[in-house]
Image (cartoon, rainbow over all chains, first blue to last red; front, top):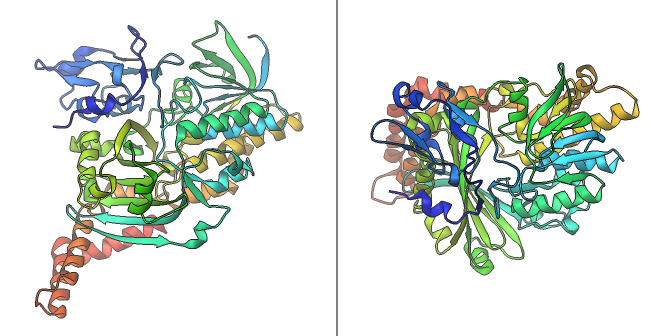
Length: 95
Length: 432
């Protein structure tokens, strides 16, 4: 089991507390309509978690701002994706 | 800020910087807007800088640009689980200045590039996200940001906002990207002493090595891996089409961990201190997946326009060249006193068509569709080639003719005559 948290720990972030730049539009779509839930295994920062009851929860603090979750949700278009406010989010030291 | 600019450039990556620099140098009033804390803080690349594209914009860039190592050796590896078959091209011609290409660290390089843009006279604003294009009917007249209350206006807006290209999408210029048209790459940077890198890779005096990899490291998915030498660090990464990750259900960081554990790769990165983990999308849909590139008052440059040659691992050079051509289009129209209408901005498209950018993208236009239906190139063949090499190289008392027969049988049972001929034809069509 690879812990992506240990990788993300090396990164620098300026978290915009209380203002996530990505939101799940309708949580019931994830829970009921989406079988595969690709966001839960494709996100390179593992921001999406599948809960025991089928719900998908999203915590954007470790987000690398790549865009994967938005594009991968091609059947349901259930990811509202914006860039963080200027200056917030991931701050790459090397890139 | 109610003043009007000749041009607004969104984004401070290679495309945006090339565009802003070229226009500012020509005396235009340019505003460049970047969402990162500083230019480079949101940008990710392998990263290899091809000198040619930058040289055409800043001829003396070598004097002060932060460059890591100039590359004298390129290795291409086709990997099985425990082995690889590879080719190496190394030439001392690449070890003579002016060097042809370098490894770079983008956060440092982009900061340097932006300084050049500012010295050329452009106004660069950071920590500001452009949220929307300001439209007047179907014409782009400026941008809206998360900072100022109102809009900022310009005669023309160059969208160099990266692969996600949110602004053009929100404005309805093109549709959402398809999972098959973008690759997701994850990468780590590992720090090692300069001398360790030089002895491990058999180089000295800031020379460096590139290893491009394909085969079983991507678990049958369409994708590649890479390992680049920087001055005091190595970058190692792997990328596959998003559609493949989605189908296979493999986590990208798990794929990277498995690749790092490969017996041919592990000793090269041994003992390194990992200091950053990054992820980035690469627009690899090719010619057929390109969005419209210009319209009423706008042009798209760089990753936002799908300007990536996935076969040759080129992107930042296409970004710079497209940024430069967009800027030259603006300069010419300005000098001719022509409005920035779709009709006149079509000149950008003509410039692109005449350059290596479109010629290369057209050359490989069939490749994405062919590979999409040909996973054997990433699974069966790497396996067959590695086993064939093992069969021929192992000395075990079996005569060579029998070995050749065994290899032939292994290819035929895996792919059949028809399959082999078909695959050869597909490769020829893809790279023709």
